[in-house]
Image (cartoon, rainbow, N blue to C red; front, top):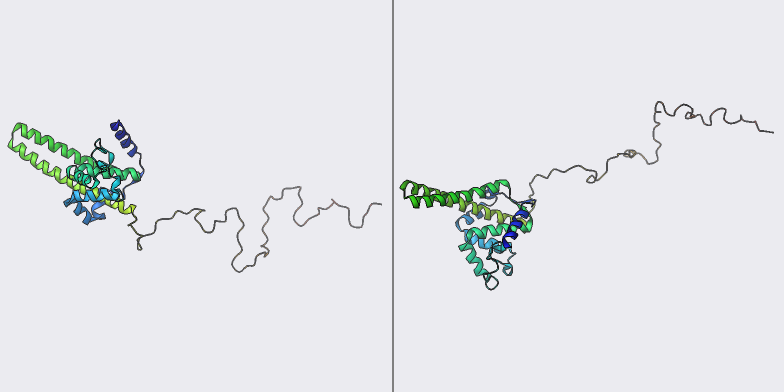
Length: 255
């Protein structure tokens, strides 16, 4: 039942429409000092970010944010601070991923394809490094053992780097949530779309033109040229009313 709920949440997360404020490739530029802090002190940063994601209300804390079967069964309600410290130390990767899922579900944030590729490469490199280490231990080859150690170092470097970028991404997103991004005075204004609703004065479509500046209202407009072919034949022309022959001549009255 819990596995089915997790699968349903994963499928629902794919239909989210919002995006992270900063992708993984731009986190170093977005907040370089925090990215360095997350690289060298990942568990401490993970503790701080989870507590901030819960709005500093540790009564809401659940192990791994409720995304694992052990969630809610570790006595979190009695000592949430200690449980969170244990989580970020013993299950650092799960703590980062749980904070990520927590923010995604709260703000309907999807992960871009580039971020998915980076995270997927990290997992694949870890699996390959693990396989090489097992093969090297079974075969006993010195060359294969050295290759597996190099691959493991590369895997660890990529793992900690990606986790640091992910945590910086979470921090920037919560800065956005908490309104820490003020208006930029020198920023270029966004492109405005012209529409009749946004215009202070609607365009004169279907309306007579307004009088020019300084011209009094009610001033007779200049005579307009008669459109050729109007009025049609058989109708009296302008200035010839009443039409000749339609009324008796003046001075003639019936007796």
